[in-house]
Amino acid sequence: MLSSLNNPPAHEIVYRQIRDKILFGDLTPGQAVTIQGLVAECGVSMTPVREAIRRLTAEGALEFQGNRRVCVPRMTEARFAELTFARDMIEPKLAEMAAEKATVQDIDALRGIDDALNAAIDLGDVKGYMRENHRFHFYLYALADSNILLPITETLWLRFGPLYRIISGKYGTESLIDRHDEAIHALRAGNAALCAEAIRADIAQGFAIVRENFGWT
Amino acid sequence: MLSSLNNPPAHEIVYRQIRDKILFGDLTPGQAVTIQGLVAECGVSMTPVREAIRRLTAEGALEFQGNRRVCVPRMTEARFAELTFARDMIEPKLAEMAAEKATVQDIDALRGIDDALNAAIDLGDVKGYMRENHRFHFYLYALADSNILLPITETLWLRFGPLYRIISGKYGTESLIDRHDEAIHALRAGNAALCAEAIRADIAQGFAIVRENFGWT
DNA sequence: CCCTCCGCGATTTGATCATATTATGGCGCC
DNA sequence: GGCGCCATAATATGATCAAATCGCGGAGGG
Image (tube, rainbow over all chains, first blue to last red; front, side, top):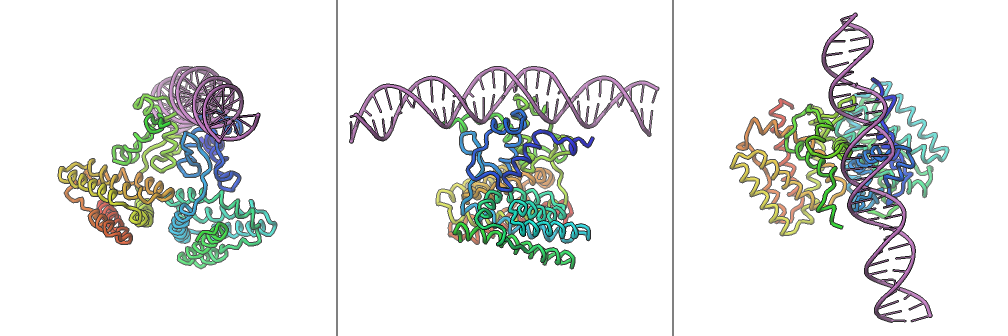
């Protein structure tokens, strides 16, 4: 009955494995992802691997490389412009919707995640920072109870994953500042618009770092 | 070399088949989609069908119904609100980007599609209207040369498909008006902002029809 | 004489299928 | 009305076929 929670199917496991690797920068842009490589790596048969790859391709986390071959997509300035446009439109909206439903327990949980995030920054733990930052945003967004915008946002973050790795490898964690405190204060005040603005500013800072790094206007 | 164009793989064929059925309202919301049903219908084995279903599920065109069962998603007022928000944000942007790249040949092609669309309306051909309307919008959007916003828009239209069928079954084609002429004139004038506004107004009219029909504010 | 380019074949990789296995949902029985 | 059996459908595997890539060898030109 709860097997879907206790025993996730093989294709789900493979999916999450590759997904997390992309999301947290373990795979570099342009890197080829082969079926048989994953078969050997995950110890499952081809069918679940194929399903995971199809799913990731549909989400934009992987890209067809012409002749039935897939790889981690490369970032271009044009794509980056579209990504920032979409994130700037959608994520503040999700934050606003979330703010209208957040309970005190939710806000405390977000506070806890942000504490862990700051601890990771102090330790210089780039991957820990990335994980906690992801957790913070998606814990918040999940409160919006969205069936449309939330999955879209997940695909947008998947496209960002490979970038963050490159950036954080150059800069380290000392330059990582965020607007999470402002978002949490807005949530406590019950001010949805202010929360949306805080998130907008938060992600805009991330965009600026990427732009600066690549020399994109 | 061109086998990917001449001989699309089986999973691609199955994918397009189900996709078009959803997009043009041949499947009703809540209808179950089974692997074995598609195996029998398409005359292929289970593996390609599984891949097509995974892909469609990732795109939001199908929905997990809990215990490893998928169905056509049902529309709710909350989902509709999110869909209209996303389309209102993205599609005018795509139209604007497209307007900056459209050639005279492109505009003529759009003119031709719109003529076919109007002919379908005059004939009371609901499905023909839906196909040509889809063609018009996505011919335009494809000009934007977008790798991010265009796939997202395709998923949004997939969520709309089942709705249009219900609506058009009630109203017929006589109430179908559009702003395609305005968009084409804006393209000829090279006015990207005006083209974006025309598209915004065009899709807003569609939203209004759905809202009125379901009594959604 | 050496360097380059073209073509061919071996090997790797992807696509599809048939089949075994497992879990779920329905139905009858107690 | 609850519980266990059975039919059905989904999951996963390994085998088989097809296609593309990579490497090597030879021919031609500089």
